[in-house]
Image (tube, rainbow, N blue to C red):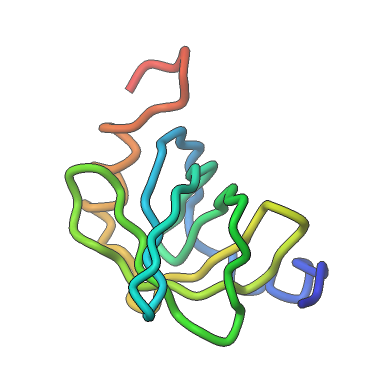
Length: 108
């Protein structure tokens, strides 16, 4: 998998927000693992995960108190993944997630 996130810069037209929240990841075969959401946009997110996620298969991300969201890996740099939602978040949902899970030390 490429480490070149630059070729995807065209997709970064949406606002991004820092976030700090533990999440659950479920791959299609049913295996579940844990990860940590680092930032979020309406179209995708950056995730720290010690498990290897395949770039050719989608997976489900569960943020506490929210429904599962389907996503795919766009780039990887060791244990940091850049991911894209298969269906972008609605602006109100995006803002609600950021408000509910602010970065430690920041006011919502």
